[in-house]
Image 1 (cartoon, rainbow, N blue to C red):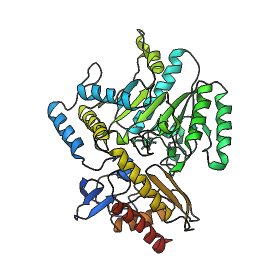
Image 2: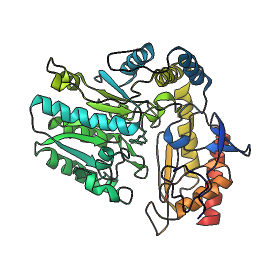
Image 3: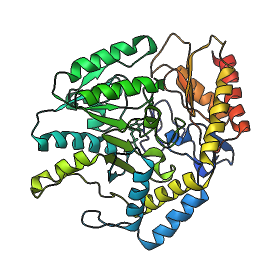
Image 4: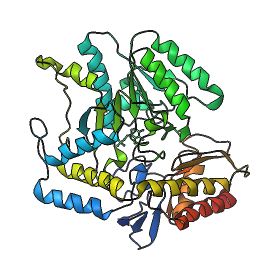
Amino acid sequence: MSKSSPIWHPFTQHAVQQEMIRITGGSGAYLTKADDEQLLDAIASWWVVTHGHCHPHVIGALKEQAEKLDQVIFAGHTHEPAEQLARQLLSCTPDGLDYVFFSDSGSTSVEVALKMALGYWHHLGEKRQRIVVMENSYHGDTIGTMSVGERGVFNQPYNPLLFDVARVPFPFESNAQNTLDELEKVCAQGDVAAFIIEPLILGAGGMLMYSAEILRAIYEICKKHHVLFIADEVMTGWGRTGKLFACEHAQITPDIACYSKGLTGGSLPLAVTMCSAAIYDEHYSSDRSKTFFHSSSYTANPIACAAAVANLEIWENEPVYDRIEELIKMQAAGLARFENDDRFTNIRQTGTIAAMDINVKDHGYLSDIGPRLYAFFQKKNILLRPLGNTLYSMPPYCVTQGDINQIYDAIAEAADELL
Ligand SMILES: *Cc1c(COP(=O)(O)O)cnc(C)c1O
């Protein structure tokens, strides 16, 4: 095998995929390739881009901030972009999330959430140390987030480093009561610190969807047993599910919530972990040992915060909800084309996210149907990246009917040629 580049790409097996697609620009729902062809970004560049690439308002804001203040230590110091963003976040997130802790990736925001939860019980003097998770979940690729995520081929070598958690089954429609019963049982043991969940959709686990009623029932069991409820809205946040945050569908306020990906509109890395006053207050003490000992070098980077502020202004000043409503309808119509096609199963949608499974015998992430489809779509200049045998699209909200047609036409052609 020739090794032409020193770069080690994420989630890439370089022995079978040598050619990287070189991207030179981005605008709206499109990326520009080095050969000047336009690539339709049907997965929002790994679920981060919301209003479109290089939105002028975001780019303007980060340019302006970059000329004033690029970076400053956030321990003992503060700055306007972070202050303004925190105020805006408090007003747009569910009531009861009162404090904002900044970091720089979804994984880190989850690590922070887990530490907040354990710290809360520790400082309170109650021995609750167990974390409960849902099967098939994904919360990131760091050691702690792998521990609370699904175990499998992705993390097998690292198993010795992962900590034990309790698991409840995913609430498939036929199985939802079982999930609730299992959760009830484990929470009743009294040693559970927190339950962490991806509300409404398990993303990397295969776009598995469950109802707002189930989410609410899960939340109520946690509340009944004083188990902290951590919502990982890293993917589901910022409009993907049709509301700003997925928890709104169930009218619940988590004790801790993680937001990242679309927080800057998809322009710069930034994350926040928000929590209730109760959790903050338990760390608030003249006893310095109760300090929340966590930091990233770039905590609340001013340029990233300015981008996030601009993102929130777009939500206020542009008809983003109308675009989302349109997109939800377009996705539903696109999926409907495959309703009676037995090459596809589990056709499903939550908000702007549409998914279906390819009816192949060889399931699982390492099934070769995914890479073959990916290559087919690339030839058609569409960026779609199946998860195993799950085909999904999650475009930026600026896509047009023409763009959506392109996606579903290409899926139909792919089915005829490859399935
Ligand atoms: C992507 C994702 C993460 C990890 O975010 P990174 O920014 O990639 O570290 C965590 N949780 C969920 C639900 C995600 O989809």
